[in-house]
Length: 184
Ligand code: IMP
Ligand code: MG
Image 1 (cartoon, rainbow, N blue to C red):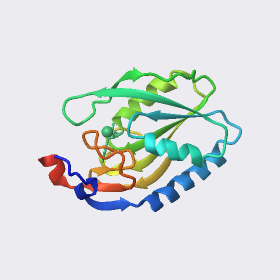
Image 2: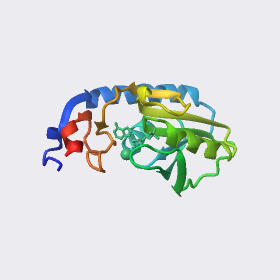
Image 3: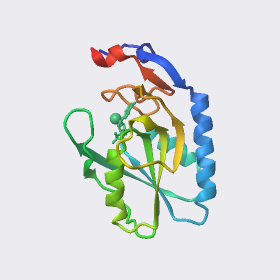
């Protein structure tokens, strides 16, 4: 069961709201420099990245559009297989577009590596990845992000859009979930 006060389920705060704000501002500045004169489309894969997307887009000082996808990855248990099924596709035509995929966390990388293959077939001008968090120790697919907010250790983190069993997404900071919450 989840505690009435979500903070009671957090073992440790990894990033405070202030730290997150600075990270996102820094990413926004870099992206603004890199995408000047380009046809930037930010694509968020729902749902984990919505909070990051909402902040990142306001830290980018360029005309750009946003779009959303819903995918599910087939696989037994908790490991994603890397075979993705598109549940909700993009509205945008990707020809000539500079696509920036906005992710909450790059873990095994299996979902994103197969998604990128699908998106590249649609002839965008470029495809890059901006992830708020990176867990490089867990990587199984040959993929890395072009923009990384912060690297985190191999622990289960929640807040700032990230969930456990759909809960905790609305915690404004990033915390490590107490193991007793998911072992109960
Ligand atoms: P993968 O890179 O294909 O393994 O899948 C990444 C997805 O797993 C993310 O978009 C998250 O939804 C989820 N995920 C991985 N690690 C965590 C975590 O520590 N907390 C919450 N969700 C996580
Ligand atoms: Mg999730």
